[in-house]
Length: 233
Image 1 (tube, helix red, strand yellow):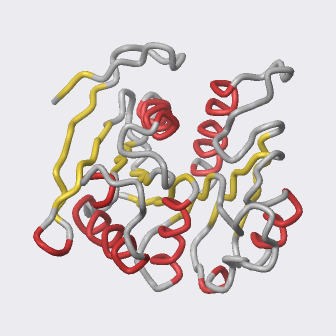
Image 2 (cartoon, rainbow, N blue to C red):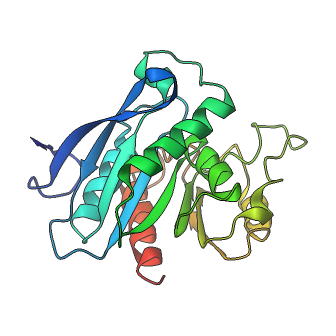
Image 3 (cartoon, helix red, strand yellow):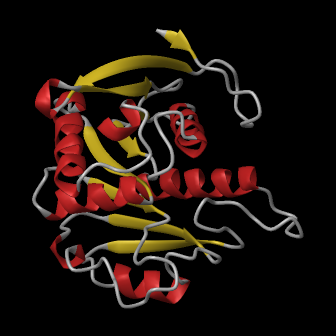
């Protein structure tokens, strides 16, 4: 087990991380990192996938995993095969979906409640497999990419009514992939959903230089919203 550094994240240094190799289709495997609770367990495991331009070391994912561990949650974050191979272009949707299914099957433990999600494409693909019937207890979507920037005609919401678990949408007011009103309209299509708005945050959870809040402040708010929400379920 590898000890993870929390420098610059506003957390203690005692959170332990374990690097895993998770088998996926085609005889491949992907890297994942697990964090375990530092306090009595809540019984939840949260599985996180990063956005298209990030990998298993995605800084928000790392922050969220450590934030969760200090509050009694297990967490696993992983990367997709294209990131494993050092490529920039995401895999086909079918490959991304199958990777999510393989990861869920690998990490699932009897008696443990399972929440899945991620940022941008990581969360979007998680929402696909949940809508297709994957057995989980909750879904968390950070910066859900509802549509490409400046293209309101290509909306990724057809599957949302098929999501049958509580779902958290957590997006910024400056996100170019969806306005707050668009996110609220999309969330309304999910039978049990909640929207948490991150004031001043863009799609990457960055803020303007003129904003007194920093990216770290946004991370803390987003991770806190996840913890608070899971504790209500």
